[in-house]
Figure: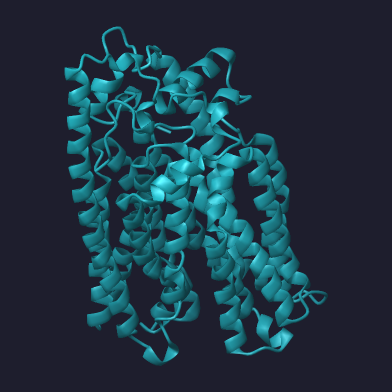
Length: 495
């Protein structure tokens, strides 16, 4: 992963510079970090942690979304249930996914390598056991446990990354992790087609699909247990000198070493976070994004078919918009990290997506509507990729960050309950109502982002007045024991 010179700076803006950097390279707690060593530590974490969490998320996304491909391969016909029962197989996933979003805090309460292993193992077994289902009830049970396990993993990974990276380093890593969703969608249809296109005499194609896509997750659970680091300063792939650097980075962040941040939750901080206005706006934004995020992968092939393309061509034509979205997730989070302007990025992306849905709702030309698909995909997924790190960036302790990301997901994951219901077959071929609803929510998301950014700017001015009072009182910020990311001296919200 390319690291620019600005990555070597342990601060997020000019205000943090006042709090963290002094002559001689000392931080606000008197520690000095060699920039060359720090870059090497960060790069090693990049090579070990980011591909691991991204790969696991990609597999989880395949495991949750292959139900549609199984249905195409004859699942409901073999088991003897109708379309209403199939719709419940889609809906049941979101119920435990919402109920267990609080499990994001488990990344702090339980050693990450243990928690990751448990989540991956459970969803791998649940996904694979769908192949053994002999009725609708068995599939419902498997889908329930699949969602429960995935709720404990994916939504909390940005929180996990905050234990390893500073605030201005977090966005691009979250972007790479979350880009696994559109990347998986890019080739999921082709993969499923390849698995189910044969005609083995001894097993149904849809059962084979669940086996082939589920078993790898079971084996990956062992990989997660073996290679997932619990904290940077205890990581086996770092030398002792590098571990010392990791400890100093953690002290810069929170005032304590990385290993001591795992194994407990400060419930006082959790409740303080829930009393903060800025904790509640991101969940509403995530809800808005998820209305569109959840509906696009499910209904895009159908939408393309109604433009006049064959089913196979529709699957193929859905790949380019998702690949663009994959690239945009990475590029936009990188830009937001460098400019410290996540709010403006989310506003821009939401407007782009909104315009895309307007084109889909109002235009009849196939070319224009397909262009609208590109705009929608390039706006929705990257907006979420920027929203999750923005939430974590502006919470003032590990427990507050955990509470913020848990609330974000509990409220936000209710969006798919609406998003998967706004494209009824009777609205074909243009689905004007569904497109209009998605457009409205994306424009609403832009408005919410503007409101949150305005509030954060006001709060930054309040932080500046507090820091100025400390300076006037003759307080030496270097003697402070509170890390800058725990609302210590120099803390500012990301705008």
